[in-house]
Image (cartoon, rainbow, N blue to C red; front, top):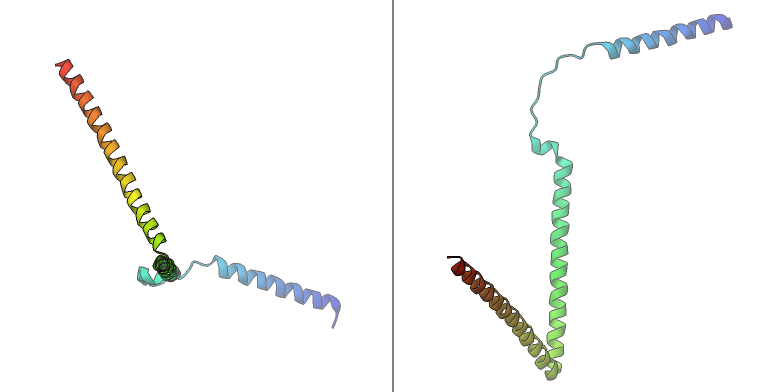
Amino acid sequence: MNTAAFWGFMLIIIFAFIGVMIWVFRREPKKTETVTVEPQKLNFFEDTMRTISTYSEAAQHEIEEKQKAEVDKKKQEEEAKDPLLKIETESRKKMMQDKNHIKKSAADEYFERTKNVANEILQRKK
């Protein structure tokens, strides 16, 4: 076979391929039927990720609860072994409650003073 004939044949094949590709991609797309898909099925990946994150959050919460329970159990065991420690923790709890009570009463006193001052100013204006 002649080389010129070979390259001519190859050019015809290449141009035919390019022409077919242009014809295929420039055609009007066929009118298709519209199909309704439920929105839940469209977001399968998002739903899966939400489910996984929900399970992981629940598992994390359970792990934290178990750790808190273990810490509380250890504290109770230590308190049972050492009665002074039990008294100390009770006194700390009572002290914290007293501090909260003092803070509340100081806030109440301040509120009452400002309320009284505001009432005096209103009475002077009348």
